[in-house]
Structure formats: C-alpha cells, structure tokens
Image (cartoon, rainbow, N blue to C red; front, side, top):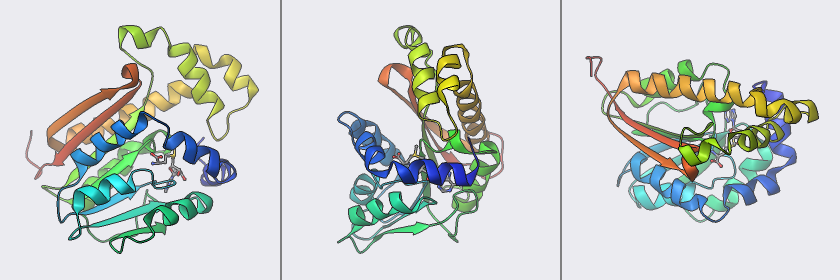
Amino acid sequence: MTDVGDVTGFYGRRAALYDRIATAPGIERWRRAAARRTASAGDTVVEMGCGTGANLPYLRERVGSTGRVVGIDLTGPLLDRGRERAAGCANVSVVRGDATAPPVAEADAVLATFVCGLLEDPGGVVDRWCDLVGPGGRVVLLDASASDDPRGRLLNPFFRAFVAAGAPTGGLRDVLCAPFGGVSGALSRRVGAARATLTDRTAERRYGEFGLGFVGLTAGTVRDGAID
Ligand SMILES: C[S@@+](CC[C@H](N)C(=O)[O-])C[C@H]1O[C@@H](n2cnc3c(N)ncnc32)[C@H](O)[C@@H]1O
C-alpha cells in the first residue's frame, strides 16, 4: 500500500478519474474548511501530496496575492492536472517531490488531504511537517477513516470495501475480505498515528467532521516545545 512505485503507478493510471472524484460535488465544502484552517493572507502554504490540485484554488483564495502556495506530489500525471489548475496564478506552483522529505526550506502552514493513510510512518512525517513550519505554524490534516457516527457506523462495511477497491495494492480478495477489516484497518491506524502526533505537537486545535463521520479534519498550531 505504501511503496512509492505502487502509489505513483496506481494514481498515475487513474489521473482523470481521480480528478473527477477529487472535485465531486460536496467535497468542495471539506476542502474550503481545510483551506480556512490552514491559510491566512500573506502566508506561504505547502500542500503535501497535492494530487491534481483540487485544494489549490481555495488555498490561493486564502493567501491572497501576497502569499504563496506550493503543491508537492510524486505522481506525474496528477501533477500535470495540478499545473493546469495553477496556470495563470503567479504565486501558485506545483513541484514533483516526496512529502516525507519535502524540498522546501520554510513555510507558515502545511496541508495534507487524504495522504496520511498512504504513508509508511505517518507519525514521523507529521513530526517533520511540524518542524518545517516551526512554533506558531499550522499543520492541517484531512483524512478518511471508519466512522464512529451512529449512522456512519452502519456503512462501515461499505466504506471498507471502497477503501480496499481504491488501495494502490488492493485486489479482489482484499475487497471481498474488506468488511472484516483489512486495508481499511491499516488506513485507520495510519490516520490515527498522524492525528496523534499532530495532537502531541500542537495547541489551539480545531476539529471538523464531514460525510457521516468518514472524513475528519484536525488542525493545530505548533507549540514551542512546552506542554499543552
Ligand atoms: C488520495 S490522493 C489525495 C490527493 C489530494 N491531496 C486530494 O485531496 O485530492 C493521495 C496523493 O498523495 C500522493 N502521495 C502519496 N505519497 C506521497 C509522498 N510520499 N510524497 C508526495 N506525494 C505522495 C499521491 O501521489 C496522491 O496524489
């Protein structure tokens, strides 16, 4: 699930389909909420694993003409779409790079949407993102995981099958076994590890929940080393 070749091959072959899913009606609200928690006027914001750039217009709107937005991703065909989306905005750029070792020296804020579940060591990577923005900087995560919402819980078996079908290394067997855990269990563990590190490193946290509890937003301001 986390091998870089699996990830880039999987998303690269499905760039057009992924872009349609990423910009489907309703998802805009989640993206706007994430951008609002991430960026303020004049900020330099880095989006890790920006994919086709679905968040870029909202981040650009938030930072205004004096700020800067940089999207980083490993998958060429997704980045091509991201570049098209950024075209015409001098202060928005999209670069090929590894979000686990981002090629950026400094930033005011980091956003990662639907990325942490793909990372081998999400806690360690979120730690690095917190170091990148430093004390006072913001790190915001938006991720899907199994729902705890009473209505959403009923749909968890379908969610698991959906995740298995959409996993870079998923196969038919994974999809059939999915209602009992499998890939979705790993996803929830990774998302949980990312959120735990963010909680550990930040103060002034804000949370949001969307889509019957299947999508969660966690935002925080990096602390200065002192206990929250
Ligand atoms: C599910 S897509 C999410 C894309 C985008 N953030 C969105 O919300 O539409 C996951 C993205 O993470 C990217 N990705 C996964 N691991 C990465 C890494 N180590 N460095 C950079 N990008 C990565 C993939 O290429 C893919 O574009």
